Length: 253
Image (cartoon, rainbow, N blue to C red):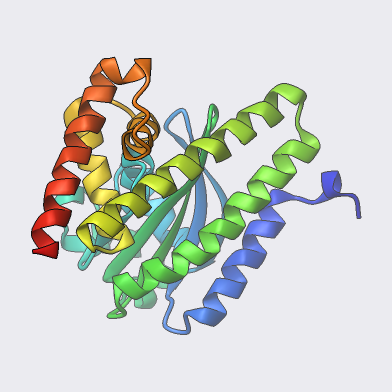
């Protein structure tokens, strides 16, 4: 079969099936793209379709938050989390009576965003009972790379030259963010999730994008600030790098 004949939905379904084997305690999962704030579900597993439909019905939830913030989102009690007051377990069971027994077992959620280009962002979400969200995020991180690879390959094979350029640019921006996370992890001796949150907080405070801040931070680390460092984003990167160096020095002491 030619690559151009492969359906993205089938690839995403295969990824979730493989992920479920690594997570025997998984109650459900989905892979959803957000394009202009409109969710497009590529694949679901278990109770994932029901939970995703409830999130879409009320236009709130961890998957949407992961897409909006471009960072990992976790929760320990989905139906009673103050961030998503409109999510209601009783209504979810009414909408999906065939899944009501499993829906009542859903407590924890881990959602991780992946590849982003001009058309949107892909989020992979896992719905859990009492299982650890930290462990789930570790596994999601591995499978998110497969999601990104499949989206990138199919986009470049079946898309126009302009589309291919956008995907390659998105991969480049993603690589910069991953490198910036590595810098934060090394300086603060923290885990990937906390590095995400620190970078995300600095981005929000400086009113700039994660990708732009990550690029400027890497210039600071390489001692090559350049002309763009005179911008507000450059200043935010200098402030972040100064804070990271201070933290590193303090922990070394």
